[in-house]
Figure 1 (tube, chains in turn blue, brown):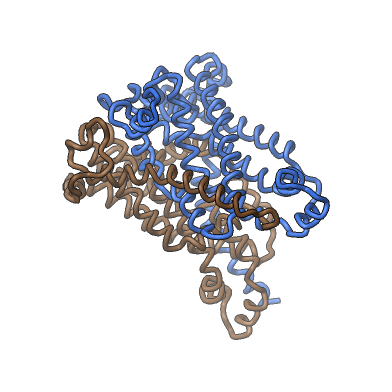
Figure 2 (spheres, rainbow over the protein chains, first blue to last red):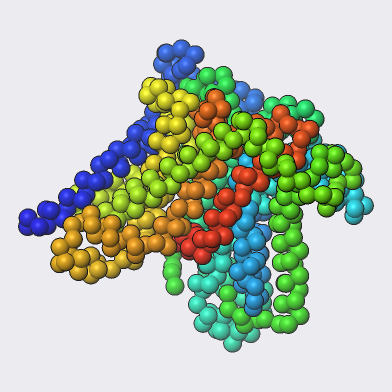
Length: 298
Length: 277
């Protein structure tokens, strides 16, 4: 018994670790909820739901939510379709799988700020590589990040490039986990490639698909760095004036939280915006879990 | 996937498609490297120069001669060098305890860890900043390091790996007179090297690449980190984009090198974290 208790002594090591976690990660979550009902730092009053009411009235905040949904709604499905397609192709080939996997994975382990600076230069309308390539194949140059219509799609392309490698690795692992007997059975039944894909591969990938959908979506809803770096000002750099430009075409939720909270010091208001995002993330995660739930396993 | 429907012709086609896509993935890296060693006159020209006439390694020297850039590099190195070992230690110890000991509140505490993983950073950021103000830590290394000495994802990942270390190994060590902490230090840690290297790349990347938090919490060049500094430069030095690209190379390269060294473990770590939930 005494030895048993001595063994348990190590459990007390959790106290400092959990303490740090509590101070820096858990307390702020509770704090955020509390702060969102105040007018810090502009004042020190409790304003109830005023911040929440104000944020839905503000056209820029509304635009930020719309842009965030637009970004998520396009970038996430494109990312998943592309990464699944590439994973299927990689698993199809007999050799050089590791090399291809590594190549597609490189952007994932690239600094986001570094990548954003590079892409900003690729998109540069006058000297950028993309317009040069377009002209090589006889197309008209585009305005990319300067164009209100194209700015957010340009960032979607960059973001898909940056993130597909992660999902490719997950899909590859899931594909490897599918037992060979299923394909053998399908073959015996005379299924062709597309039938096998539709009836065997995709259904059996559902758990992986669920995880990938949820994590990619959560990441996309919190997009910030790419937008901040690629759309900030710089004389003639080919972007709008402040991050989120041109004309708020790339203003997203986290950007608004950062600007309201730290540029305008409206921390209560910014917390309310962040909290709405949090609730949206929870709801969308729940919906994804319900839609992609599987009742069986193999 | 299994190889039942492979045909020679379609294999060739798949190779071609994968190669074309690979080139598209690589082009931004190529453009970054090539621009970083161009002469200024070759940066802003039309049509763009694919191969620089002469490689200007000098750009990197000029970059580090900017007093501020050297500081940013130093600051990022300090922050990462502190964060990585701290997170490895706290995550592996907590993961070990959560996985291998039964005590009251084990599940509840672990659930708290898990749920804190789901909260977007935008929610945490403002109260965390207020805490830093109360501690008087704004624009100090404490603010850049202390909040990131524990990592919920790290604890979660380590706990997953700990289940693979057999209980009998621990019992054998106990019979040999090891204390519980010695078991952790001498038996567990050497047995989860793969997991530790996976986690260390994750943390290295996050720490080195962290942007939003350093952006709000630093104000002087004494604490600004490389991503914040380079993002700032990329605006000011718009006419010297070769230097900006050299800056991008300096941010990108360390993580790439570590990744290529520890690649196998990293991939294994991603797969375990993703699919064993």
